[in-house]
Amino acid sequence: MPTKLQQRRCYANVVLNSKIFFIGGEFWDDNDLNLRYSPDNFSKEVIALDLATQTWEDDSTYPNLQSGRMCADAVVGDNRIFVFGTISSGLLQNQHFGEY
Image (cartoon, rainbow, N blue to C red; front, top):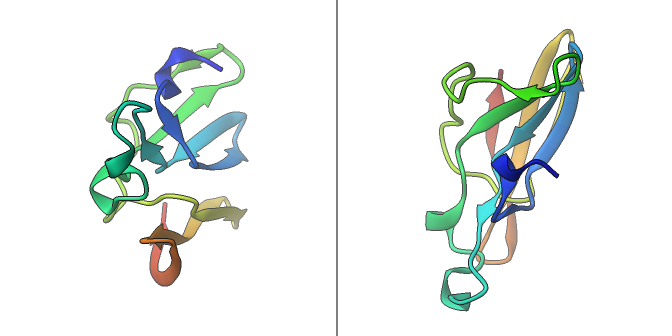
């Protein structure tokens, strides 16, 4: 996996317009297990890998999520990406929804 996602896990993925989108996820450090599953460690970033050029798009290309997400679900419909849910303190929280 390209280094752009180093130290990030549990992100959502979708493919749209020949790009792989990596949405949210948790930043982690094996040396600090106290931060595991902490919403403070959940990413708001939406980043994309262009399959045609095999390069990462600029980080500012897509807007951030309104709140950080870990283990969210993402689907593509009507040429848009829909993001649902997150994990918070081990519980699934479906009140979060984003459309991009």
